[in-house]
Length: 177
Image (tube, rainbow, N blue to C red):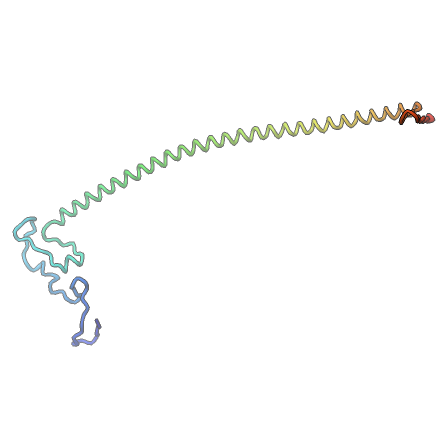
């Protein structure tokens, strides 16, 4: 379809899928031209033209709009009630989970304190044992020095004899200082 801006020329105008064209308004207000009885079930019920139904108009001269609105409101209320209940259930579940996590967190914090306490005690015990080890090593070294000094003193005061085997005897004698 081609649109023409020149007046007076017949141009093909596209029709929407409903058969309604934007320029054809002749039957748009036909509902309001005749008197109508809006009570449901009356003998003079009018039918809405297809062009209005397809265009999404909410005008319903039969009076069913009130019933539909009430049903929709009721449905919306029930949906909102379900939504609130679902939200409340979710909130309760999250609250229970929060409490469980708080308890677990407290237990883990207690375990951590316990481990840190024992780690500190073990570290202190290690430090004590290292110090004791160093002291004992120093004492052992002092005892060895004293022992070696005594041996040297004893060997310098007397002559020493060594026998390497049955046939050889070596005698060493030193002059006292």
